[in-house]
Amino acid sequence: MNYNLIFQSQKEFFNSQVTKDIAFRKENLSKLKHILKANEHLLFEAIYKDFRKSAFDTFVNELNLVYLEIDYFLKHLNRLSKPKKVKTGMVLLPGKSYIYKEPLGCAFIIGAWNYPYSLTLIPLVSAMAAGNTAMIKPSELPENTMHAMAGLINTNFPSDYLYVVEGGVPETTEMLKLPYDKIFFTGSPRVGRIVYEAAAKNLTPVTLELGGKSPAVVTASADLEIAAKRIVWGKFLNGGQTCVAPDYLLVEEPVKVRLMELLKQKLDAFNYEDGAEHYVSIINKRNFDRIVRWIDASKVYYGGAYNENTLYIQPTLLDSITWEDSVMQEEIFGPLLPVLSFTDFNGILCEIIKREKPLAAYLFTKNKEQKNKFLKTVSFGGGCINDTVMHLTGDSLPFGGVGNSGMGSYHGEFGFLAFSHQKAILEKSNWGETNFKYPPYSKEKLKWIKRFM
Ligand code: NAD
Figure (cartoon, rainbow, N blue to C red):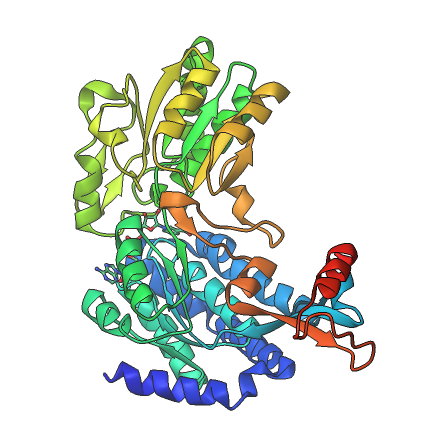
């Protein structure tokens, strides 16, 4: 396939100015929502075939988030796209200053596999809302969902506006050579580096939504019952294949035994057995093998079972883990929860900040001082106090990483800005002209300028 031809046609379409029209943007956002809703059953079937993700999970954690994002833009697009008036400095008077938001142009969106619809379509919605054209490359691992998205978008939208490419590494590598106006990538830090390097060749701005090891810290003052419930839900959602899932647990020594018991109770109650409708299987054999190698029977406190035929891994709590264990050396991205204990709160924060900046971090505590210390000391993309994962729902908080977990953010207005350029405009009056800045210069002029400034 000649990606350059599609890219050139998108550039031409963008230059025709059509996508800048607010009515055009709204009409196409509504159309996208309508198409997705009308074909929900196909989308549910596709994802179930890929990794046994239920319609409930897919609706709540994927499609509904896409619909909400579209609704947000339908409601707020006029306000967001209006030039924003800002203060004009004394020296610039008479005149006015404003920020004029314009779409960047042709965007390239690369999706990850774990939430294949939301991680591909929410950035697409932001790109459309901001007035861009887009080439889209969903992850190839869930091949049925990739195919479903390509089918729906490519048959309902012209390719010079939106186009989904089905493909894997060779296709993405080829596509990355083109001089897009924006690249929005979701995936691993390893591939993020490849994308960033390719973007640098064309000076293309990037948003990198990456991953990492996100800690959950439980202190002695926490409400343990609530903490256990929310940690189990956030960790084992999507079979542990969630970028912001707590990767490992740090629990204050005096409450460790009680917390472990409660975690076990919640796991029993949530009933994540093989074949359960609400429990997702591992995406493929390669990831299955990567995860099960960390199940060390001598450290299993709960779970540890797996089934190669169904790619099922039972939610597993690993006890007596140390920072040196192999499971602590890379992002798990699966249903294993290593548990470490601590006695010194400040000491454990020091351990966290010695490592790469995580995408998320969670603290369970009722102690205000500890909360403030945690927020001030640890750098991470975003997170929760007394909850897990939920910070990424809703449109008022930016979602993104920092350092090794990414750069830039999206959701709501943040997504709009990620796909926009903020053009700085000073609109000067034709009256009130002074000659201070014009040559020839003189001591007298300098004296007045110094006084004036
Ligand atoms: P990945 O980096 O392997 O793949 C992501 C995308 O990059 C896919 O579309 C893939 O086709 C493409 N790709 C893979 N190798 C490539 C290469 N060599 N050159 C060019 N393109 C290539 O990531 P994944 O396995 O799909 O997802 C898991 C990772 O993504 C985890 O680290 C997870 O934390 C992270 N993630 C982050 C977020 C977020 O929002 N921050 C969301 C989901 C997943």
